[in-house]
Amino acid sequence: MFASASNRMPGLVGQCLVAFVSTTCCLSLKAAEPVKGEAKRLDLGGDVTLEVLYIPPGEFLMGSTQAEKDWATGIEGGATPGTIREKYEGEAPRPMKVKDGFWMGRTEVSVGQFKRFVAETGYVTDAEKPGGKTQVYDPNWKITAKAPPHPWIPMPGKSWRDPNFPHPLKDEFPVVCVSWNDGKAFCEWLTKRERQAGRLPEGLEYRLPTEAEWEYAARGGSKESYAFWWGDDLADGEGRLNISAIDFLPGRNKTWPLAKAPWSDGYAFVSPVDHYGEKGRNGFGIADMCGGVWEVVLDHFDPKGGHEELYTVKENPQPVCRGGNYFDVPGNARIAVRLGLQSEVYSDSRDGFRICLGVPKRHP
Image 1 (cartoon, helix red, strand yellow):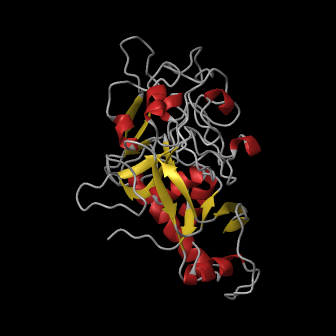
Image 2 (tube, rainbow, N blue to C red):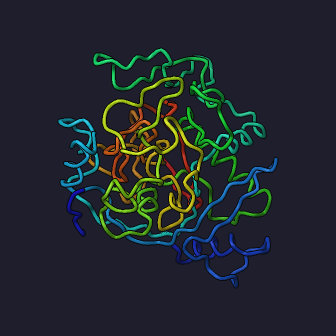
């Protein structure tokens, strides 16, 4: 594809994570520290579970090379050339360090998992509130030379319960049409639930990952600045991710327009979480980090690039989303791609989220 450029757990934090993996409810400091890829399955009630994996502290390169950006906006990558979008990735790959180990959801939060949260709390998402709306697929969209390339429109009455997909909604799909606020609320519920059950020690909480944690996890332990977690070659992504590919749109004899992966990934719209199994998991065992749905993270958007520590702004905050989605061309589903959402209440049928368990990271 192109030439690649090479480019937490001390003290109380360590004790807390050790306690989490202890087989007893007490804060045992004698249990072995978790190892990379160690999995824990959380019981959400109602026969619904959620799996998290341990990711140790480490270093990585954040961002992309100019060669990668050139490929992204070329024929195979298909991203729109001449925009500032690729500049959001930063001037060049930058060394970053994640100081504390953390646990991360193997997959994005699913419809079934979010449904459990709502059933137990009665939570109302931003899209469902009076005056709320969400971006969804327009079933009347026509693929013509003059048609807009993005057939998404704001529509009231739609939400995570009905994202206007042209096919039935399933519990195993990643939940979409949820805002940054909604993702945070899910994490706060899970923190409270696990703490009340005696399964979560003090000093840790469930939350959205920071942007640095997300990209570190997405790269799967690689120290190189690759476009995708498996490397730079798009062809090696076959059977690993859900993006715009050779799949007919439901009820139509056409695929998504513009550039696409030259194979069928089985789904024109969203695919079930972890659908691609072992082949779709990176070096940390995390699934669906490229394509699928955009994942909102804890940071506010800085157009100059991502940060090692949590980044916040006081005025007009725009949450960062990462990872691309099922509609994206290959160049927009790379690890380094990052965008800012319109606001903390914005939601879209291409956006979801993934949880993290780690030391608290709070906005002022």
